[in-house]
Length: 399
Image (cartoon, rainbow, N blue to C red):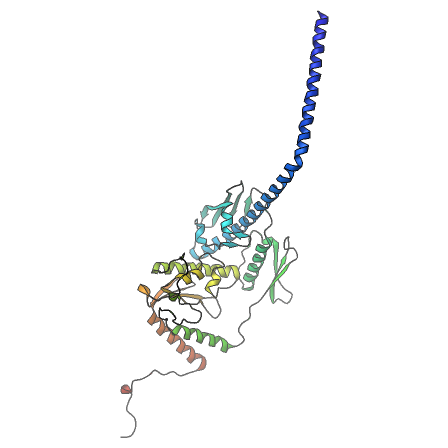
């Protein structure tokens, strides 16, 4: 009986030994197969991982740049309207960013406003194809569930120019997410503001913005004012092909778009008001971003997505006057003039305060003539007498 039990145990041990050998051989074969296939799999995955990582980093850079600008634009909107907005499209953020464009960004992230209060707002960005999640508030306090990449050099250079332009004009600078990348100070002679790079990728770089200089002669200033008045007094050009246009203006009634226009060709008063209100917001943004008001309509397109230049080419019943700035460039006036239809002879004027005036062109012409007369009398001491009818003159001479 005892020998039978002993022999059974020996058989079990032999089977266990054989099973262990087979197990070791299978593991060894599996490891050898892994080692043989690893170079092929690793080379492919490394390439894919590297490309995916670069795309994600670029997308994150664009996202942070857009969020930084959206916070600033919310403050600009508040300056004009006295409140923040939940509709981000009303901020008119330009489609082109330093790191890409908004169309590219929308493929990776969705940005929304999750909270608005009189003195507070909160933006949320969520990944479309990833788990990225970022929040930012009105003070540029940013929270992200990933390591925040450094901003692009192009965006940092834009930030330096923005801060320098604001300091040069004595405006309050609004620090952003990446304000620690630059140190703003005056140069030794205190004639210009200087930005010194403090971190990579702008470490050690120096950007300078000189102060503005006034006109050298009072006569030049007066001459330009006279030219501006005379240009306005020349009146609207006929709405026909080949008709002359005023200097700096465009007569779009003679220009037909080559393809289907994306913008309205015939405007009504509500469209004109929306145009002027958008231009006022864009002008305010331009001053806060660059330190001065825009002098041309095309410059407003760099800070907004209203596409003023394209709209000016598309519209047919409106003439867009050049932007008029005051002598100290702290005030501005927009003027749109109807050239046909129900708007014929009407002028729509809006200033910095947002008040819009609608006047007949004849009344505006009389006012501009009187202003030109007063300018000449006060500046050159001209005496301009009104024309008196011969029949109304008193009789003189000997009888």
